[in-house]
Length: 214
Image 1 (tube, rainbow, N blue to C red):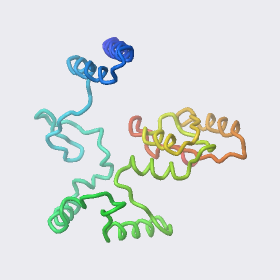
Image 2 (cartoon, helix red, strand yellow):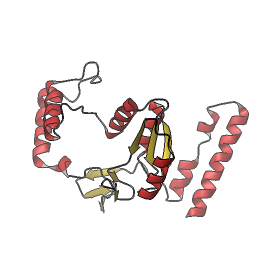
Image 3 (cartoon, one colour):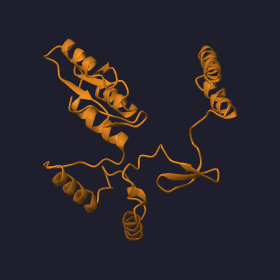
C-alpha cells in the first residue's frame, strides 16, 4: 500500500514540476490524476457518500458501518428534542439568515445563547462561531501578533496552524503531548516576547487528550 501511494504522489509532483516549466498555472489542475489513481487503488478515503448518519452507525454503500470519524461527541445531533426544536425553528424562521452574522445574520437567539454560555463558564461574555475552524482562526489570530510566539503541539488541528499564520505569530512546535519537550522549548524562548501554548483538547486523529494539568 505504501509503495502505491508513494508512486502516485511521485507522479503528481512530476506533473507539478512540468506545469511550472510550461508557465501555465492551470496545467497542473488539468493534469491532476492523483485522485483517480488512488480511487482505482481503493485507497482514497475522502467524499464517501453516506446515505444515513444516525450516530454511531452510518449507512454507506447500503451497508451499516460503525462511524468513528464523527464530531458528534455528545450525540446531540440525533437527540429527539434537538431534532424537534430544529424543525420548529426552520418552519418559523426559515433555513438561513441569507447573510453572514457580521452584517445581517445576528438574531436574538445568538445573544441569548451567548449569555447562557457565559453564565455556564462563569465569564462576563461569550462569542459563538459558526464552526470550530472559525473559532480557532478568529480567537487565536486575535491574540497573536508579529513578534509573538505560538508554542504549538505538532499534532494540533490544521485550523490552529492556519490561525498562527493569519495572526503572524512565529510557530514553535513541540513533540506531541511531550511535556519535557514543551518545557525545553519554553526555556529557550526570550522572556520579553509574548507567547501562547496551543494544544487540542482532544486530538481527534489519535484519540489522545491534552495533558492540561501538566
